[in-house]
Image (tube, rainbow, N blue to C red; front, side):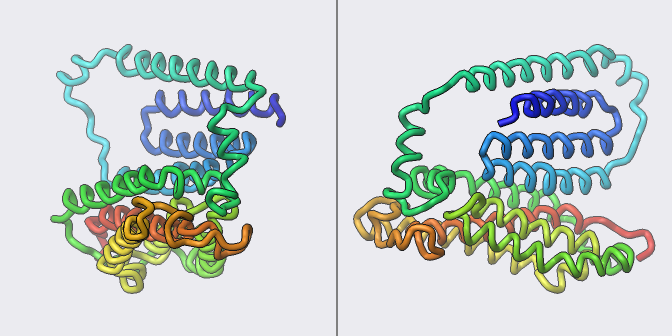
Length: 327
């Protein structure tokens, strides 16, 4: 591991985060935050945490940036009334956020410095690294932790997406569904048409091989959602809605949740407990093969359906109220 390179990346992460806080222009702040996410994904990859690096790059630098840009498109620059500006001192606008970022940065670097001095693994980490293959049949230790050892926690985390989709849908339920058929230029559309099969293949490999290699349902579903978002942006919402309707997305999201719960109930029916893996009627299979790791491939598919359909539904709910002036 190149310690000097990590130190430089840490420095740039701190600088870009601080700049994003201090920037007054929202668009510039969003772009800076996206760059911060790319740097953090690089750090995670160097620290041998590829699963976290994938999540950081796809969700933070990709999907979150897209959602922020859509929200930004709905805002207008309106000057504050004089009485509002007088009540908000300048030191509160700049110095307090800078102080908070500095304190959090110091705590982060202190924690990383402490971890750098560790030479032996904690007991729990040593157990998972040594026994994961035997106890779950999965080669991906991170995937085994998420979908076997603490699968019930993962079920709770997926409900966050359900709550987000429900909240956004309720808030924007009064919006008018306006389908735009314009999209971007011909060159961009042709380029997207060439790239889409490769992006879908990449998403499928992350999703279906999540128990063998870095990735899984969260990352694969996020890439699938990214494809739907790109279709809206490049071809127009009418093109995307005609191929993947809102009802279909809702059905896929609900289907993912039902599949996850059904896999858990099979464990109870077998007398092994909710979301049990190998103690339930699931086979470990041949280590390294596609049909291995018991219930983990099914849970990855369930999470991928929920994440992919949920995130794309949030994006579409946010842009469906956009009225084009030329329509």
